[in-house]
Length: 149
Image (tube, one colour):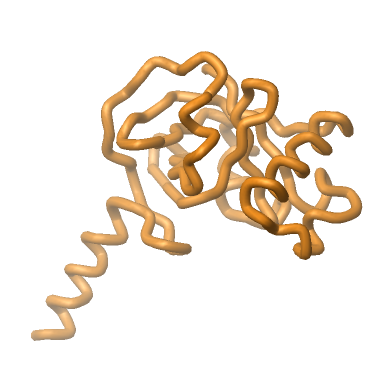
């Protein structure tokens, strides 16, 4: 009986919000207008992203602001589940401080933009020694700019 209770409780918790590296479902929050420049996002260390909006899948991830744009990256490149979801449908939701933003993920492949994003990740998260930050950043770590839908 205790095992069943724990399983139900775990399913309920994981089905709603991402916890650490474990994915969740639909994100709660109030839908907000997309800000100009994402200034508030500069100091936020952890964001939540919801993909596959018809069958929500959410995760915790890092993000950076570069030249007024908000960016996220997958250190696993195209192998990350959420990246596959965005390949199928780029519509996604971002949660920041309880507010939800309806956005569209656009993969970045321009060298200058990738380098700026890489530098900002290194600076913000102090990750100079990570091999994914060297070499071809856009191949090792897939980068997405989050644009308005």
